[in-house]
Length: 181
Image (cartoon, rainbow, N blue to C red; front, side):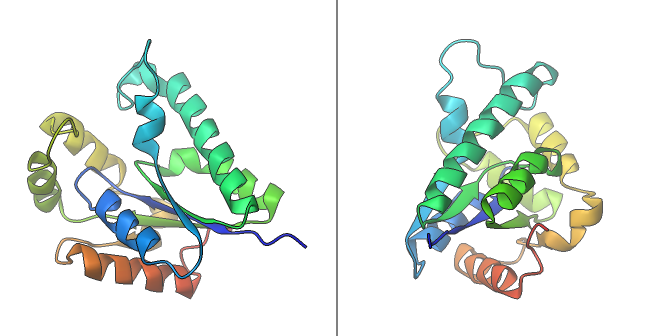
């Protein structure tokens, strides 16, 4: 019998703490774990890249999500837990659900969401080429503001540092409440 890992989709708006928390979560894991950042898949597109939040990016985003899901499935079937770090809105969950069902994998969906002021402050203070465009950040924040069936998958990270957020994510996953069914 093959031992399968599980996948934790760690998502939320820019500045929510996804990458920092995912790195802590993966590095402190008690089982073999992969930290898979979705940005690497987008940055791999050298010609024809469309910013993922623009209307013309839908087909590109679907292809990227398909590549991410395939990578997650491969690692998980190989016995690794996989922490997926990126902006994965509920509209991208059907391929993850299909993977979970097809490969009999446990998949968790955890949304980190501080208040808008904290999100903007954190995002604007980021280094390098990370997204700092206020209008885009507000738009992406809005996409995670009303999650309907996934509202109970939210962790408010506004008053939590990265270590405390990682601990909350571990509790959320252990509780099974954040599992995609």
